[in-house]
Image (cartoon, rainbow, N blue to C red; front, side, top):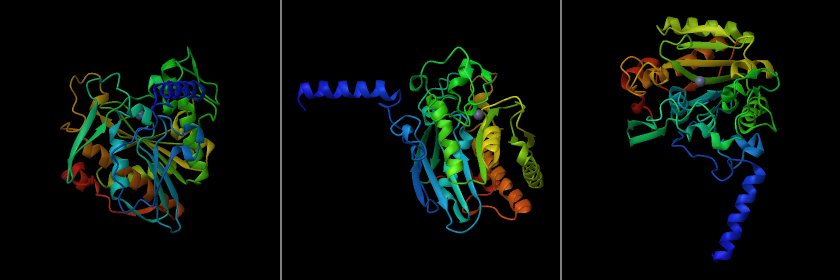
Amino acid sequence: MKKRQGYTLALIITLLISITGVGFAQGPMLHDIRPGYGVTKIGWLSDYHAPLRNTSVDSRVYYLDSGKPGPTAVILGGTHSNEIAGIAAATLIIERAEVTAGRVIVIPYANSSGASSIDERRPNIRTWSMETESGLRTFPYGDRRTKAEDQEPDPEVYVHYPSGLELSPDEARNLNRAHPGKADGTTTQQLAYAYYRIITEEDADIAIDMHEAGVGSRLANMLIANPKNLDLAVLAVVELELQGIIMNVEHSSEEFKGLSHREWGDHTRAAAYLIETPNPGQTSSIADPDVVNDPVNPLSKRAATQLATIEAIFVAHEMVLGERPVWTGLPTYDELVQNGLGSYLR
Ligand SMILES: [Zn+2]
């Protein structure tokens, strides 16, 4: 290309960035996900909200469709990119699960912009790795929020839409304070809007958001449910207890807005849940956490807890409503704890 054309192209790209907003130049981050036989289709979040196309928050959507009747579950990992048990569990579903009734739709990197950022509290942890049958695989350990460069500067007060609730400015880039989203809002609000669209357009019966909290936090090992499906969450926790897995349960707060379990449950037909497991990386008093091989809360155990809780939610739905998404191919809780995540990732 001649020099003059190069300048022209650069000018056009610069203009496009200024017109379409931040994130255009970077585009979506591609992650190491190796879909198994259960994946019947791969799409994008931008299929549900076109303005996300070619932005850093666009992310792949994996469909595991049995082609047989049954409920649809939408499952998110990585709403917060440093809460890696949800990302690991979502990756396992995509790589190993085969769905035999209903549908499971998985987004492993729910805020992919955060995955490209550095955890401001743990800047020395940039990735995590796992030895698998095909060699060492490496995944990002990102930040809790959308990358600053991918959104307009944080406002002095972040006003949640549509409730009008005022939140601290740092929450303006927190996907889990932006639900149900805003079609013409900030990058993070538009990302949240894409999840609202996916849940409504796919007519989801169940929506699950996988998170982690600091070890010792009140939230660690917690299943949070929208009040309308709290009874199902209680049944799920009893089902887990029968297996010796102790989870607490609570319903969405009345005051806090913007959280997935609150807004999805209130604004869509779906029963909405959020799962929290204990991540030593999120405990500020731990100086040098090992987010994969922590002796008490290893990643394998945290991912096993996430998967067991999803399974227990499905069991509860079958008990009360008579049907559930049915899947095979995933390790049991005990298998995953004993053999480790690396034995099951591809
Ligand atoms: Zn979280």
